[in-house]
Image (cartoon, rainbow, N blue to C red):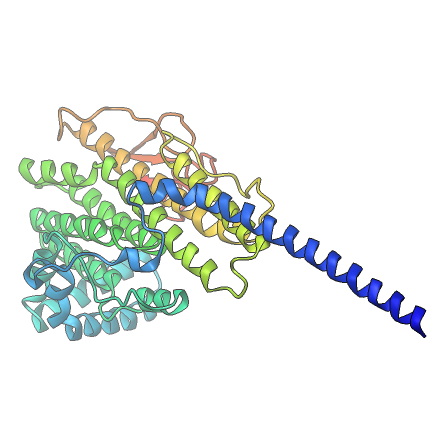
Length: 391
């Protein structure tokens, strides 16, 4: 019996020793993983980059400088427009019918809410679009409020676009050009909002603005001054790159907060995943500053989280290249028309590095990029296979 107790005691001592060693090993591995995370976070802190959702909170500004406050009184008018547009779209079958239906909606809204369009233009010229967001929320709740804002920026842009179509139909191309400029300015305001989802919304709005701007350039009667204003607003690629950087910076802060919300976020496996995620975000920022090209279809890193987030972040590069392609297409069209003596007659396709394509269409031209599939589909712009503008 005494011998059995001695064996048991020794076994306990051995097990405790093994447990102690394992604890030390795990502690060391966690410490090493934490050091790797800190090695990536320290440069971000030094550069003043956000690393938490709370860091995304902007400084307060007066209401009279805030585009979000300026459009609040028109939320009912925008809801009415959205409802009428949805009803009109549901009953239309062809593109020609669609344009006529949209113009009809725009006329009805202009009659019902005569101050709406001027208010949306005025708000577009304000320095900041700052909706009320609660930056103390957990990541999931924060994303929900970003996606579900009281006044949808895309509705604002649609209202301006349909008003622009109405103005063109009424023979007022300069008035339509003002709507196009307002849409492009709204795109800039939205792009400065946090998370990649806002960059994608901004790109959709920019595409609408360029589409209307192109219609104004193709139309007769747009004044030289208004054409010049359109070109200045369309062609700011440095702002596009800066806005993409904002999207990645804020998305990274959101991702870090998401990691911190996981149970066991300080354990070595999740810390390793966080390191991989931070490396992926840095990779995307390096790809964006290249003059051309897209991100690979999947990361080289085996990280689970990196692979899950890769497709969404990959679209941010596609969105940036899309904006660049549309901007360059508009500049080439302006040069071909003699509207801008400084505009180049040829530019590089941001998707594949070849020259932007120019295709004769009647007495004008279509200008396009190969788009994300990197295949020249002959100027197939309407279905989105190629990216550009056409009469």
